[in-house]
Image (cartoon, rainbow, N blue to C red; front, side, top):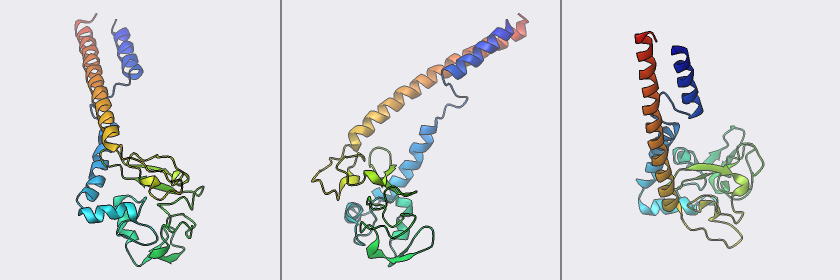
Amino acid sequence: MVFRLVLLLTWCCFAHGWLWSSASPSDVDLALEKTIQQQLLDMPEAEQADVDTFGNGNGNYALGVAPSLQEKYKAEYFTCDDGRKRIPRAQVNDDYCDCQDSSDEPGTSACAGKVGARFYCVNFGYRSLYIPASKVGDGICDCCDGSDEVNNAHGITCENRCDEVGKQYREEQARLNEQRGEGIKIRQDYIRRGKLALNTGS
């Protein structure tokens, strides 16, 4: 009897994905994203606007770069991440791939296909994420804030859908957390029954 209960408990935990901790990975991810996005939210509005207009060395913030990495793009000269080349700031996001590691073109598709070539979507109200550089300026709105298509040559204007998408995401997370809570209760009940069986020697 006890052996059967242990097997049943083990199967339930794995089959339903119940974790031994009530905190899910998404909770940790959301906390990290909130910290990063807050750096931009705390900026003056004039500086926030520069996030969407940085190109060819203009503006205070580089398009396609995470807030935590913006500082390195502010100097008069930019050093490639691999340290092999140093270029004027004006050559950052100029649609020409100067660095072998693609780090000088975070906001364009110039380095598409190279390792590390990616674009950072800020996505206020939702979750920040990286997309391949090949998706930048292709006329398809991949970032919910539309930042990947700010400088597209297709005449496409992307609406900012992050509030709507973020709301749907949070509602789904709340539903999943509720399910996890129910799963934990069932798991604890199995544990209680298993302990009771052990104590009674059944």
